[in-house]
Image 1 (spheres, rainbow, N blue to C red):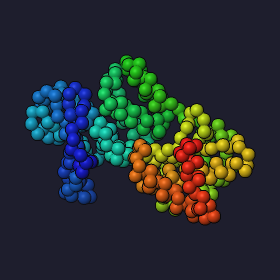
Image 2 (cartoon, helix red, strand yellow):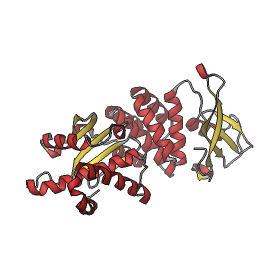
Image 3 (cartoon, rainbow, N blue to C red):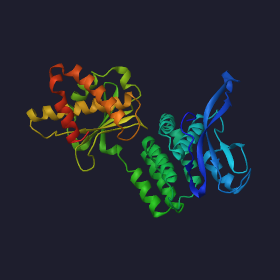
Length: 333
């Protein structure tokens, strides 16, 4: 975070924030070792100081102020190294507010791995704030990031948090956004394990035997190291609810659009080959650690990765690989 742009980012109330680097001393077995860690410098709209309302407002989100640089600038940072869940929650907040996708991805995944312990503390931190309205993009990212993470860990816990938000008097806009983010999805899928990867197959696709057989064949061509830390592949139909395949970097999960399962067998070969190439493309995003968005360089890297695997899986089709690439683009990546 410290190596990124130091440009100020607008925050509610006329305040601004920019990334900062903090030097900390590691406790425990490595006591005394220095390390650099990410923090956030808040520039207050009004003069503040220890114990003032402005300071307390931001401390509720970012943790204990570490250093006052003048009457308006205060450096916030990690509260402690002893509780990794608490540490990563504050890291997630700072990353969401600062709009840092790399830091967000790291904190999100660490909290996801902590499971129920994360849910308890995420709920506590989220419900400390009053969610009457959402006036700023930072607030939207904060709320959506927390709710999406809770839902990914435990759907029932996410529903309980929404009930608590409503009971606490959140605005209708907040409630609508929360319910949209936390729409239940797990019951829509059958869970299978294919080549060591968790595959969630939509009930809408009917019998999943052929899907699992093809996925096993396709994934067997992928190097084991490239599937490391891939949390899940969600196989969905080409319907109104789903119109594209994509890679979700925060959770390291893939949504794979399954094309034409109802088509005749001869035609299905082509749609299945397109789906295979799409799968390799999305795995390419995972291998290269890509972020959200249609970024040209990222798409080129993912395409190159997919071409290499397709050439290995279908050496006789290499001369017409460009046809599948064009069809994949037209039918929904």
